[in-house]
Length: 130
Image 1 (spheres, rainbow, N blue to C red):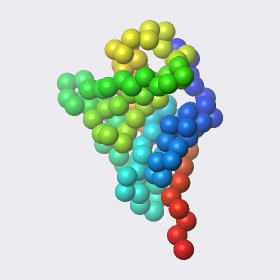
Image 2 (image 1 turned 90 degrees about the vertical axis):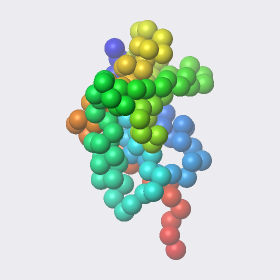
Image 3 (image 1 turned 60 degrees about the horizontal axis):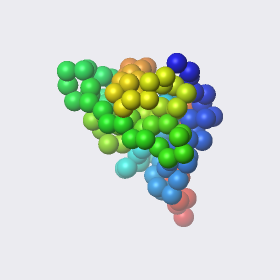
């Protein structure tokens, strides 16, 4: 399976979250944490959330997922048991386009990011104070 480069992931998430007005943090394997109630250190807060909600235990709620197809054949979003933790799966990453295969792949990426969180990008789109 192909690995998506960081710039492609950043571009994809910018398009997906355009106009949301919410800051977000991107992790190495494509998992994004959208911060509904941002604090001063966005990367630290997102890492806390991902450490709690990223790792997968297939026998619990962390094993559940939902697959959303993106327009323009861009790929899929895989959601989990936290509404603000979502993983992007590009078309070229999955040889099998079934929701089951894509979901399992996205869940595995979220698991990697949750167990070994490595922030690759922080996007703070909040209006400047003052």
